[in-house]
Length: 49
Image (tube, rainbow, N blue to C red; front, side, top):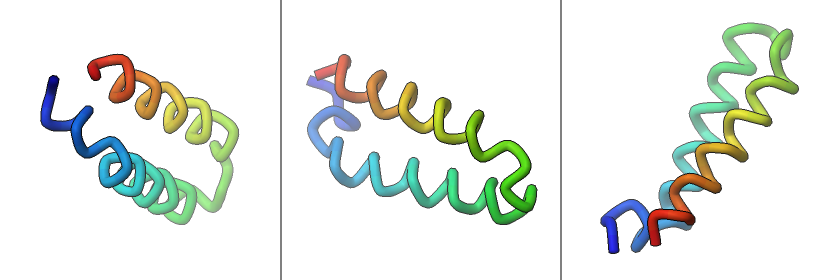
């Protein structure tokens, strides 16, 4: 099992924070795309487990 998969909850938090920063920097202009990317990243981490 991969380190990221073992700590999926912590990685999810980091992914959420990164998305929030992108939304803040872009004024939410790409919020839907950021949300999609966040979910894809979270799913990829979970699949590694």
